[in-house]
Amino acid sequence: MRLLRVGQDWIRKTWFTADGDTIIVAEGNERHTARLHWHSLRDAKTTRTWRIPQSEFALSPDCSMIAQVEMEMPGWVEALHVRKLDRPDAGSMRIPLRWGVSSLAFSSDGQTLFTASFRIDESYEPEGEIRCLELSTETEIRVVRTNAQMKAMTMTRRGDRLVTGGADNRVRIWKYPEHHQLAEWPHKNSIHQVVLSPDEQILASVAGRSAALWDMAENRQIVRLPTHAAPVNDAAFSVDGHTLATACDDGTVRLWDVGTGKQRQAFDWQIGRTGAVAFSRDGLTMAAGGEQGRVVIWDVDA
Image (cartoon, rainbow, N blue to C red):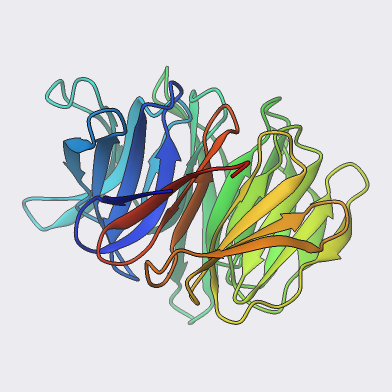
């Protein structure tokens, strides 16, 4: 086990790069991600830091692009910008915003950006939309209307289904690009994360102190994991898809058997509230992020 110091605040998300030599860490507080850090595992030092001006952002699957909301003068108008991380000074793709952004997600090939926005209209009714933006042509493909604030999204690698989770306590599966709803699954709390297993047969959804596993082919719940002692902040599948890891506000990382829903292991690395958990691309290493910039790296088989 290795303890790293990456920043000073709460670690909200972490990713391993493809070569496994670097982890990318999102650092901030409960409401706002303020910075991304690239930390070299070989040299044990932070090699790069990227500022997040507003809370909502998304990294492309290959970590080469970032989509983030930025405030512009005059008038402090919000707009969405998509930038290449290896050329931060080369300008950005600018996308005007009509409403406040509640969630952002890239497609698996990094060619499409999904933007969920939300507002309360003149009659005090909730109104939401999902915009699908083709990045190569900078054009809007389709808008999906909703009556809820979407807080999490993901897309299948085949590009045929979009998965959303929202403040209405519902997971929804949409056929893409037709955008008609295929399934709807309930939770007891607002859903803040949806993640697909590597083979995309299983979906994990996280809401409050619970997480549930769903069968994507049969549109049914497989198992709801036992209620955690505190809110669940993050979840990640192992490379083989047999294990789900959850990061919890009680400071633990728990490993669950996907087939049975039974807990396999629990780790408390004494890093405070655990905000993030990730598996490396080769499946041999795990990372967990906690408070005060603390990140723990350990071998899966240890």
